[in-house]
Image (cartoon, rainbow, N blue to C red; front, side, top):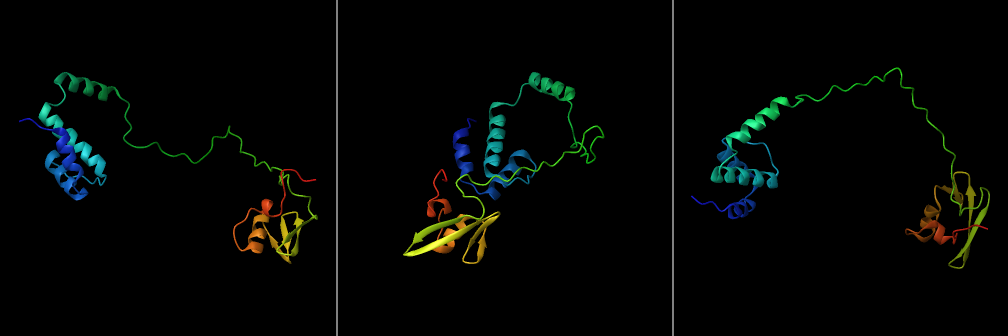
Length: 164
């Protein structure tokens, strides 16, 4: 009997996962828990092709068995070790200096901008920005409060690449 593998694969791709699992059980003689449709299609196609055109030669089977016997196979994953060896020193957390954006004036400075006929003033703090009595974490948050939408704070306050 001549088997058209391409047609068989095309037919399998149209099946649901449940139908493929049933076909897998018929083809291999055992059920599967797999739900991956592409994998099921490939496995069934491989098995149909092997049945139609012949499986591995006896020589190839013997060689595979030899390789399997020589292989160092792990049946269980290695045991996790939580303790550190005594020779390894504990890592030291390094405190990095806070880098502020080079476009910002120093803390205490006032950033001014005329917007919709009103002069807006924002005070630069060590850790944030003060606008109308509230402290914001970023210039973008201040710009969002003013405009009501997302806006880049540096662009809104016209702070270019260099301050000065």
